[in-house]
Length: 123
Image (cartoon, rainbow, N blue to C red; front, side, top):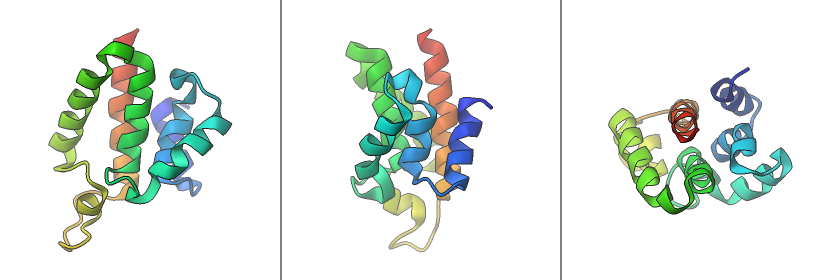
C-alpha cells in the first residue's frame, strides 16, 4: 500500500483528516506513527482554520525541506487551492455558504497525493 492509499485507508478507519495524512507520512517527517497521532490532533476539524489534511502535509514539508519549507508550503497551498478553491476548512465543508467545495475524504486524498509528489521531488 502506498502512502496515499494509507492516508485514505486511515481516514476510512475513522482517523481525523490531519491524523490520516500525518500518520501515513510519519516516516518522511522523521516521527513515529504514535507521535503523528499526538502532533496531528490539534490540527483536526478546522480548529486551526486551515484544513487539517493541509496542515499535516505542511508539517511534513517543513521536516523535509527545512530552509526551503516556506516556499514549498506556499506552492503546496497554491496547488491545493487550484484543485479545491480553498485551504480553509469551513469553506471546503461549505459551512456558512451551503456549498461544499470538497469532502473531508477528498481533502485527505488530494493533500496526500500532493504531498507524495513533494516527497518524491525532495529525493
